[in-house]
Image (cartoon, rainbow, N blue to C red; front, side):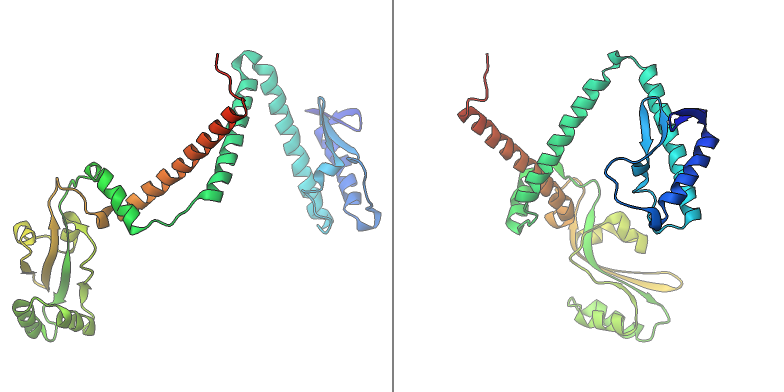
Amino acid sequence: MAVRLYGYETSLHVAIAILLMIVSVSCDKSVQGPKTDEGKMLASVGSKILYESDLINVIHPNTKSQDSIGLATAYIDQWIRDQLITREAKNSFSSDIGIEQLVADYREKLLKFNLEERIINERYDTVISEGDLLTYYESIKDQFVLEEEICRGLYIKMDRKQQGLKDFTKEWNNKDDNPSMYAFARAYNIDMEADTTSWRTWTELNTWYNGWSKSKARSLSKQRQNDKEYEYFLKIVGFIDKGEFSPLEYIKPQLTKMLLLKRRQGIIETYKQELYEKALRNNLIKIQ
C-alpha cells in the first residue's frame, strides 16, 4: 500500500520509519517549542493529510521514547486504514442514496435531543408524592390485572429438632398476635419471612414450601406443614385473586417510572406549545 509522506510516494513501512524519527525528536523536551501551525505533514491519503499536531492527544510529552514510537506507529496505521475505507465508501456509493439528507436529518435530531435534555434538566421534578401516585394509579389501574394470585404474610421454617418447637407451636396455635413468634425465631436464628407488607405471587410463596392450601390462604387461615426435616408455618394477612386489579403497593416501582416518563413527556409538550405561541406572536408562522 502506498501513501504520501513529505510529498513523496512511498511504502507504509518507509513512512513509519521516517515517522519514528520525527516522533523521537518531537517527544524530546529539549527541542520542543511553541507551534503556530499544524506542524509537519506526516502522511497523506489522497487529499487527506495527517499532521504532526494530530499526535498531540495521542502521545504525552513524558511518554518514554520506545512507547511513543509504538503509539505513533499504531496511530498512523489506523489513520491510513480509516481514510482508505472512507475514500472507498465515497467512491462506491452514488449520491442518490441520500447520504447528505441522512446526515442533515441526524444533525436535526441531535440538536433537538440536546435541546430537549436541557429543558428537561431545567424543569424536571423527580419527586413523586403519594397523592400523585394514587391519582395516577386510579386512572390506569384497569391496565394492571393480576395474572396470578398474590399474597402477603408471615412464613417460618423450623428444624424439627429445634429446641422449643413444642412451645412455639403452642404459641402459634393459640395466638393471632405474632411478636413472641418473631422474637423466638430471631433468637434461634430460624428461617423466617416476617415482612407482611410486601406482596408475593403464589408461585413465589410455593418456592419456600410447595403444598400450601390456596383456599385457606384465601380465607387468611393459619397453616402448618412438615416433612422429614422441617416444620413450616404460614399466616396469610392479605390475598388477592388473579383477575383482580393489582394493588398500588405491588406495582408502585413500575408506576413511579411510568409517571416520571409521563412527566418528562409533558415538559417537552409544554415547551413546544410555548414555542408555538411565541412564534405566532412574532408572525413567524405562515400557513397558506
